[in-house]
Length: 101
Image (cartoon, rainbow, N blue to C red):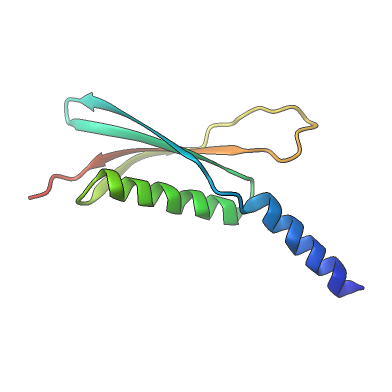
């Protein structure tokens, strides 16, 4: 019985955390170069946050052919109704590409 409960608990944890995060990208030209703003959503568990970080890291590496500088990282609060099944959080990065010299 304990094994069944454990399996169901683990399965529900992964079902809530393991969905593929989508991401958005915008850019803005500033005096010190172009800054890119990339964001993705994740569920409130560490596995999902790690996945979101990997997604943004991969995207930053595609945007910047050389290395990049992480200027800012934010996780704004997204208010949802109390009856919402699983809260979604947003991870926002502001990056700038390093000059390829």
